Length: 256
Image 1 (cartoon, rainbow, N blue to C red):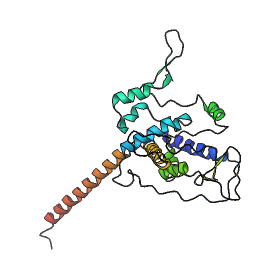
Image 2 (tube, rainbow, N blue to C red):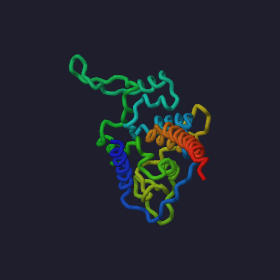
Image 3 (cartoon, rainbow, N blue to C red):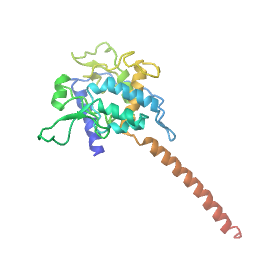
Image 4 (cartoon, one colour):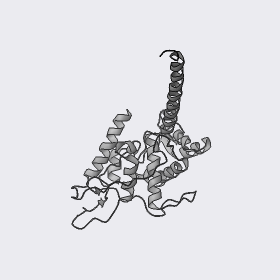
């Protein structure tokens, strides 16, 4: 199921690029190489950064993009308390799965077990609100592209003035990291747009880094567990190798 959604997410991103009409002749600029806390064998998620990323998603991205594979209870992994998760969920409304006693469907505050509420009722409504472009679901976006977090960071910071000789159609924007450079999404981030409670700075770069890290977690929430398990397995194998080497030497010590 996740592979299917991954393919759909990638296709949606490419569809968004196709709206650009024609591609610029210039090549895509190399992606920035960002130092991520979760890179490497011993990498782990920075929960403070993930919370900042969730704030960026809530205040900026959630207006257009869904996170359909996440439930509100998953936010507990970011360091939110049980009460905070309940409050975050209850700030949204969902249609109850079962009708009321009168047989009518009704809306209720979301619960931690509910999936993230989508910004639009359906794809057609999303296209109407976005000049025909369908904003892709972001649940697996960090896995849908090679160098996912770097790509997301590069895309969000890659809006530039089109170089001489390149014409950008009305309603589109030039982005040096987007395939074809013509993108339907306006620049989503601005300096000081999101005020982080930890006073970590709200430059476009900091906002982009936070949301990229958050989307990496959304796509691979078990990364920390996987890294810890891998480290334990390596330690076990090293220990077992030493034990077996010692046993071998003891058994064969008298054989010349």
